[in-house]
Amino acid sequence: MTEPGDGRGDLSIGRLAVYAMGAATAVLVLATAIILVVKPGPVLGVIVGLLGVAGAIAAMGFVSKRMTRNAYGPDPEDPEPGSDR
Image (cartoon, rainbow, N blue to C red; front, side, top):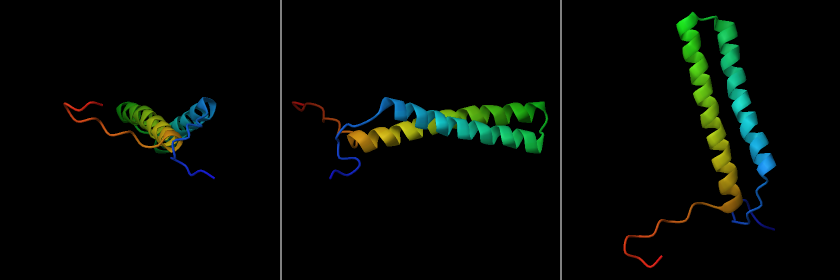
C-alpha cells in the first residue's frame, strides 16, 4: 500500500476544485457572519469584506498546494547553476 505524498500522481481535478471552493466558501461565510453580527460601519464593513476575499484566495491556494503535494510529492530541488540538469 502506498502512503500519501509518494508521488503516485492520483489527483482528481474535480475533488481538488470542490475542496478549494469549499475552503473559500467557508472563509467567505465567516466574513459574512462577522459583518452581520458586528454590524460595522461602511468603511470597516468593506475592509472586513476585502479581508474575506483575500482569505478565500489564500485558503484556495493552501488547499490546492496541500492536495497537490500529497498526490505528487514535494517539489524537486532546483539544479545548481552550471549543472547538467
